[in-house]
Amino acid sequence: MTLEPDGTESSEPSPGQEWAYRVRDDAPSTRVQVTALQREGRKFRVEIRHLDGSAANTTENVPRNRLKVPWNEVSSYDAVMEGWKALRKQSIDEIESSAMWMIFELLVPETVAELYLTPVDDALTIHNEKALNSLTGCPWTDLPADRSWITYESKPRLSPLASLSIAEMICHNNPGTVLDRIMAEEAESREKVKRGGETEDWETRATVPTTPEYEYRSYLRWNKPRHELLRQWCGYRAVTTHERLLAAEAEVNRLDSLLARTVDWLREYSKSGAEIIDREHEEDRITPLNIRPIPDRPLQPHEIPVITVHSRRRWRH
Image (cartoon, rainbow, N blue to C red; front, top):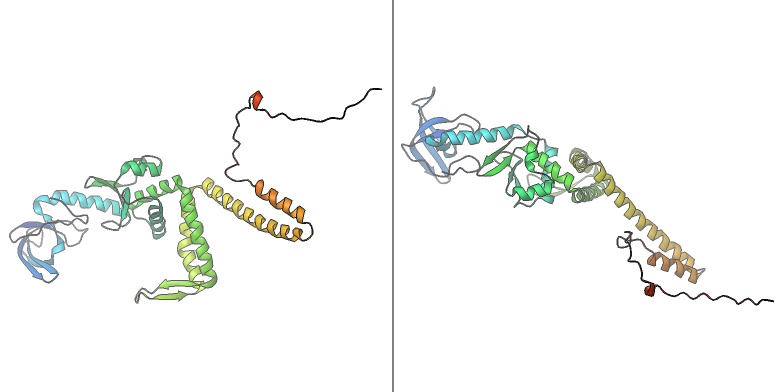
């Protein structure tokens, strides 16, 4: 009999059956007997009689979702719940969770792995281990020994802390996309800190304006620590290489603009000189297509062009 992801059983109880009852999801399972069913619209409650413990032979009216599985399946159900409990113990904070969700949104297709919020927040389910290994750059099972994971419905389910390690590995192996996203978010935050922005009112769902002070507090609380964590995952070399490339591109654009203004000014005084500088600037431009030192094939003797050098004849006296 198949269990749902939240641990509940898919079939319905009947009067006279013995079921496993839990007063809370993290409470131990106790044996109860179903005595009656009560359905009123969407409400589904069950009359039960306790069979074990200090409450034996007492009756109680409880919601249907408190009955988990038939009693003869309680051992496998409890094992599954203990597994989820072990994963739940390895929780992460909000900043780590936000950074991890960004990585999976940017780089991991849902057919490869998915993050879930139930029954354990930030737990990862792996659908395609081979594809995930190509993203991490190594087998995902190379996680530190203290990271918990279980196999449920034939798929690995990782604890939030183990999922965070997977996100770090993926980020370190694919830093370019992440760093571009960070730069874009920081540019957006800079504009909001200058002029204010917009947010959604959680009660009315209406869009309301925000002040620059509010945006700056939000940046310090959420974006800045998340970005620093992501840069740490990318690694020092990737971050500095990315920033040097962006700085070089920005400097080229600045010099292009400066040279264009200079040539326009020079054209008023020396049209031919301005055209020479402008032409050389375009023809000798260094691009990714010509930056590589590609060796050319040696020329055959018949391919070497003949260069005629004229010299003045000298007469002997």
